[in-house]
Image (cartoon, rainbow over all chains, first blue to last red; front, side):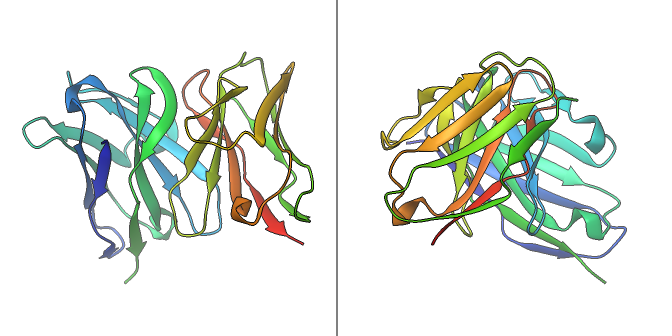
Length: 120
Length: 107
């Protein structure tokens, strides 16, 4: 069965970077986009962007250009998101999510989320 | 960017009551809309896709409808396990955009 396993919670300092992971199993990793979604405490959801592990293509929400960098490692079926120049506004839970079909963006599968806390 | 205006922000209803949540799109998105349920401390779960299609395993008391650029999620007979936050998401064009969420509680 499809599973998305995310890395653990991170406590990081302002101005630093963090890289969180999403390890996929139960399907062909290179055949589906992987999306990333942000949820700040008490707030709604924001779409960050997607990566297609098959060829490394990416698309970002312009709001996250320069903030988030999406990569994927085919050998380990793991997607990564690096967040840079962290501020308190980046404190949030970050989800990875896989759509039911590549390019058909209804998200049947979600990771449990990774909480990132930015604090000095 | 396409704006999704979701209402109400919160809702308290009695068991067995009919509940309706709406999302208004700022432009035509066709049927490219989905609804998600998020329980406390959990990731969202797909309820409805294509505006009206029920996702696998979702109880039939959930339904989705569309009228022009207004989309609705209806719960026909509210159950205790339905409490949580409901989100709409347009997938017509990037950036994908969510509604602001509706927190559903039992009265």
